[in-house]
Each structure stands twice: as structure tokens, then as C-alpha cells.
Length: 119
Image (cartoon, rainbow, N blue to C red; front, top):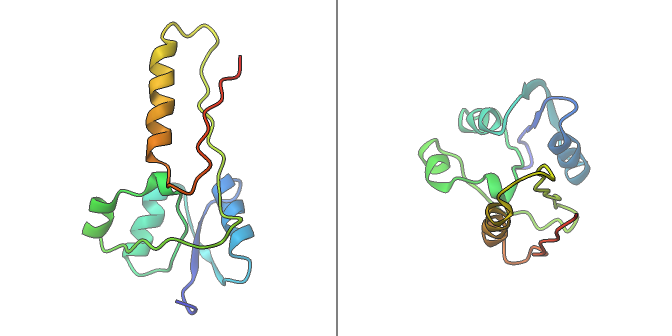
């Protein structure tokens, strides 16, 4: 895996910057840029390199169908902050709470699971 090229999203995407900060010693392929995670995964499936994707974006059945293997990384700094943002005038706060709980249930066990309401 040390000779693989790291595939990234386009400039300006926060995941691109986070990937570069975690994988600072990996060679990137500056000729290939993707605009979505699905495109990145398609490039990986096509043998163009490797990439990092958030745990919440993993769809194991589909990824294994296209030939993508998922491996966790042990880098402590590798994390993302997820925000669920709605209008103050939202009339169904119970649905928002349920969605927040669903997202928390899908996080890896070692994630800091906290759901904080900001008024």
C-alpha cells in the first residue's frame, strides 16, 4: 500500500484538507480530483489509488460489489465533527431528535457519542 497514490476531493472541500493533514507523508495524485465520495470510490474501484472516507459514508454491500476494501485507520487525529442544523422555526423537533439519535447509533463505538442541542 505504500506505493499507492492518495486520491482526494477537489480543492476547497473540508474532507480533502482533513485527509491531507492525516496523510501528510503519502504521495497524492495531483492529476485526479473527485467532486464526490462516490466518484472517489469509483476511482479506487478502478485501481487509480486509495482514499479516506468518513465511517458514516461506508456502504459495505455496494463497496464490496465494486471491489473496494475498507480498512480502519489508527490515526488518533482522524476525526470529523458532524452538525445537524435546522431552522429555529422547525415544527417537528421530535423528528430532528430522532435523526440525531439515528446518526449517533451509526457512529463507531470508540467515537465520542454526544448529542447537544443548541437553542
